[in-house]
Length: 559
Ligand code: 6R9
Image (cartoon, rainbow, N blue to C red; front, side):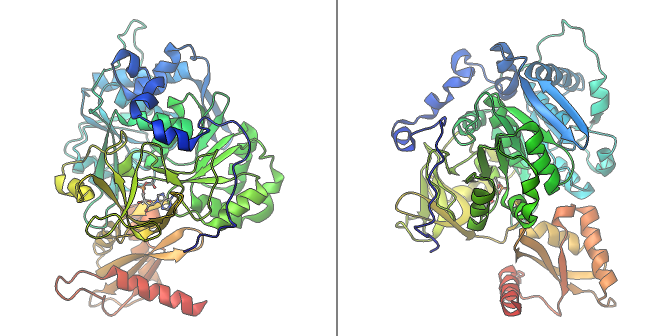
């Protein structure tokens, strides 16, 4: 089953925020865990206040909140400066008619303004919808339309990908540059809107295996989960420099790129631009990054670049974490040998709002395992009837409800929400896994057709729908093809409409069509033309699973 007993890595000696996992599991309560947050004392909550303003009120206004790095550009903002900027943005939003509960989207590259916009929206009680920077028109439109977003914050470049005339609810588009140039009286009122723990704050769209992406809504209470997991799993301390490599359009980039580290008063790094191994290593060396959160696909790319890491002083790194897809043991061993650090895998989902299965820094790691349940979390491996299976058996990975980060709803779709809770008292993840005698959980696969390419969850349905909009494509079946670097890559099988013949140019044209209309990262890297697609007899559903098996069989033969 892949558990190699000799491959167990002991913790690196040091002092960690959580030293004794077994003891805390006995005594844990979310109420106790939330004690460092201010709403525990004041009874008033606002997630943006807790994340930034609280530190200013507690006397840490001059601490560096962020380092921004893009090419040769460098910027530093203190907590006080971030607070003042979120106040400014919040006032501009109010003046543009934004009220509590409204959905406001952010479509910006990874810049301080992107983070500040998200916080400003939440500060006035509205719901922030961060969009991934690579989205094209269609993806932007579908998401804003779904929850009837009214205002969008973007910039002069990205606004070109916003088809405003096709988004009826959207009454205002704000350019960050104009927001930055707005001036208010110094005496302007504090824009914080105090809300309930249950009020919505953040909506992230995530792919399902059928239908359009779902809008996963999180409530202000999620910051309790963000705060505690930031303290124990990220192990943030006051002198840390923390870098999460994701864009806030992905839940990792918002929860563990923004909320969790800042709730724990970390100095964070925001890095713009594309992935390049040299730049990443240079950044760690230059800013002396101590905590680094990234994804297996990035680690695999770094690994494949070989020795260049020897040119950089990476000795500042003390704690490294991974999320998004299975973390290959080879990668853990590479990091251990080359960087002298363990990589701590973490498992969670957009819907769970925060870490559920983790490797804590003071505990041993079993390469191949995602770790153990976070304190306060109970994992179950269930059969098809929802009955718990014994240790070692593979089944549906489920978690006892509730916990503070758990989503509040799927926007406008009760049925899709209820599907996660089909067994009384459990949240069913859609992943298959097993758990060993020491509680470590081992991921096996998704239970559906979802594709996981470079840590991005891609719904085959959305890609298929786009493919068949191309005049040459009759039908399409999209799968994840196993790939050593990306985990999976998007592969499309298509049939052609009469009158079209297969050619390299045509396939490239189809690929570019998806890229330009949906998003670059979902465009199939491979397209193969078939005479017909395998289908279920009764419902005529395209059998993606069969396509996948065929592909895997072929790959095996050719190796
Ligand atoms: C945070 C995030 C969730 C799905 C999840 C699972 C996969 C996440 C993983 C992992 C293996 C890990 N996944 N962490 N698979 N090991 N440590 O990734 O959210 O984009 O919603 O994806 O990602 O399949 O169900 P999201």
